[in-house]
Image (cartoon, rainbow, N blue to C red):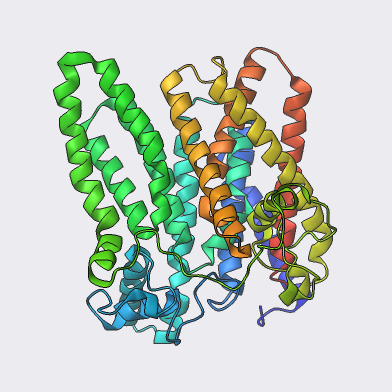
Length: 467
């Protein structure tokens, strides 16, 4: 933000805020306050992502990227495809970051080349890779909206679910991160969505869409495989409910699904295994060991006064080791200490951590209610399907934290798509309560907490970019 003074920066933010409000009022002048609030939330969320990308270079607040112009890291993997038209012909364990599935890196390389065709300098074209991850983040919000619409929420519940998702800081952070996390998260949510679409439509076109989303999510990052248990349940349920008459039809569809998704999703790890002996679930070691802490400490020691992650490299006496606390902090402010960049951000970060934690607890509660209660989502198969998506993510995350006891293993970005799933469950529980005139205080509490959460997210990420 070197082009602005602090006063100019603040005035610009106020003007943009006012313009977005005016645009919302004009376009939605005959709609309810919640419909207006939903539209404004989407516009403001997109603006915050754009702003974050603007003030965040590709060498700041990144994960495994290292930086363009280096010999290793995910940026170097992208640059490999800029200069070569083939996969690396050496053991990917020899260079950090090269073991990753290559979808995002290939797309980023093509994007850099396209930029250069239009006369953009190479260094600037590399910076513009953030526009891709920005697009992934925005499209994620679009598919979250499509998911919420399928469950016919009223405008108030829809606004709450949308605000929690669109304004969640993890998607702001990942919109500026040039690694492969955001693409995998987007494709995973698309897989969840098209699973529901296919379940209702029984359409060949929809299972083909589902197969491509599933395969491409794994081609972006192997954690895309986490939707497999839920999809297997969906396939078995559909096969059983169809009876003998439709068994052949479903089996043909499943074969088509496998023919498309398996080669796309597994070609990279299988190639590395066959050619270089790389284990299918290979993850390089990192020097962030948390082995000195007990299981009890890692789940219960949640008390410290820092709203940002505690790391020795930031001058703290220990590294963040409590899994629930690390999950919350990394979901809201990443693995970074924003206080080192500006003192103004800390009070808002504290309230953001409190409100975000309350919403997370509410999300878990509503998930349990919606999955095990018959009243919130009438279709049992849909309930169990979405519940399995959620459970698989949590089991994977906890197992990763314990099996690979490093600080970076606790980062929420690996399972960030569950924000949309939790928001959906909050929405359907509130819909049922409102329709049956139950627990109005609970609904008002969630609405108030959501508004505070959105305000604090805005404050933190506006102040972070202040000159």
